[in-house]
Image (cartoon, rainbow, N blue to C red; front, side, top):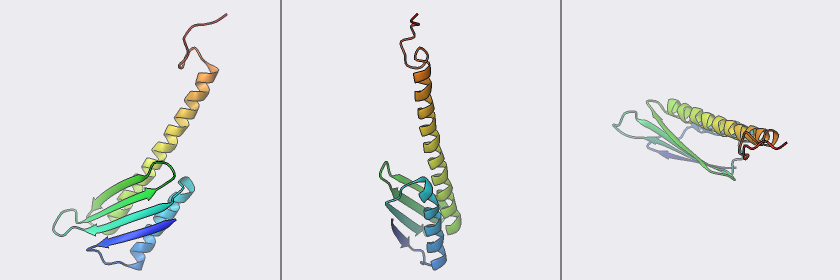
Length: 119
C-alpha cells in the first residue's frame, strides 16, 4: 500500500500522520487498498477551518470522501466514520444481492421468474 499525505497550510506532525496511517490500516481487513491519498488543509478564515480529503484506490471502485470541522482531528474522525459507513453499505448491499439470488433460485415464481406455476 502506498500512503501519500499532503499538508496544505497545516504543519506536518508525527502524531497526526500516525493517526491517519493507523486509521487507514484499520480499513484493510475489509478492503484491499492499493493506494491512499490524503490531503489535510487549513482554509484560512473559512469556517470550519480544517478540511480532510481522502481517496482510496482499490481493485474495484475507488472511494473518495471529504469532511470539514473546526479541528484537524475532528475532520479526520468525520471522514473515517463516513468510510466506515460506506464500507458497511457496500457489505450490506452484497449480502442483500446474494440473499436475493438465493431466494430467486428457491422460489422461481416469486423473484424474477415468469410467475406461472407448473404442475
